[in-house]
Image 1 (cartoon, rainbow, N blue to C red):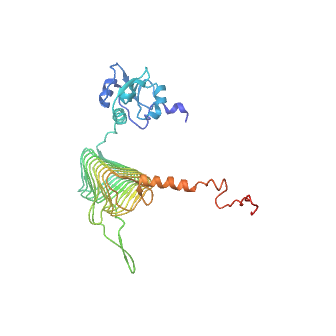
Image 2 (spheres, helix red, strand yellow; image 1 turned 60 degrees about the vertical axis):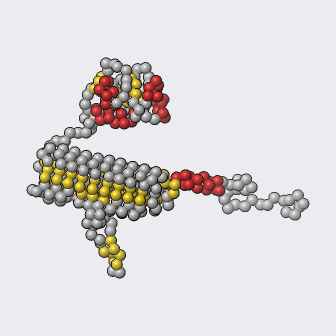
Image 3 (cartoon, one colour; image 1 turned 30 degrees about the vertical axis):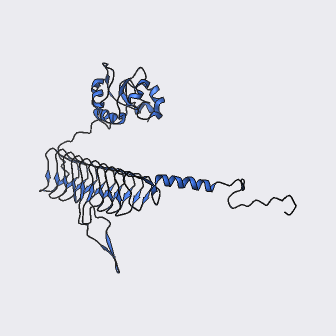
Length: 366
């Protein structure tokens, strides 16, 4: 593909429906910002480097001040302290949170695709399932007995909604996802391939082998939860697995049975949380971190990438390493090891394990 075919806008019209053009005044209102009053119409959003006079762009990181100076964007969302650095040919839209403003403006131009009410002829819907007339059920989807699909929900192609699953209003389930033994609040997004409500990893060890323990709990996904592609959330063994309101799970995340997450937690890709661990509100778990079971992670604690967490973490603490430890202690240890590994002055440039021959002393004793 030639570079010109890529265009300058941030969203390819073949994949992302566009609204507009929108007036500068409307964009300023959506951004909750302030700007000079100009009769300007804008047609889309784009990065600073590729934006043209018909685009809105943004700056949220001083690292890109050079790109701001060179931009040809028609308008730029910036913090008020940087408004004076917006080129004369662009309109500065001053806002205290440019990234959030960018999200709202981008959503103005590219809102989510509207739900197309109705059940595809190839879908299989149990006779006693309750599918709201405003919901969309895609090709080859399966809706189980006594399931409830709420208003304006979308169930993607090939997705499976198990018996008695309940979905609140405005939920989205991506293609080939599966949900069982679960109750979803409103505006829950399940991305393609995710698995919700399967049996947890529970078994007893006996003299003759392993004995599977029945998993009798549910999965509760509260309002505004998002579960990334190919992530898995096991149902509880006796109690429920709970994902608190507003929490976001990245792709390829594993949540074990009986885990309870508070509000607005973040779990990044390839992280795993073992059974019965509790996360309080606003906890952040970075990529590839692993948490053992039956832990308590305090409010606003942050778990670093690839950390191995084997004990409770107090509120507001940052931990990293395996086994995990407070970040300051971890980096202090790194610095200490580096100092110890440096060749000493007495050993010169000799490689580790080498011994330089002793130099003769002044009295000729060798």
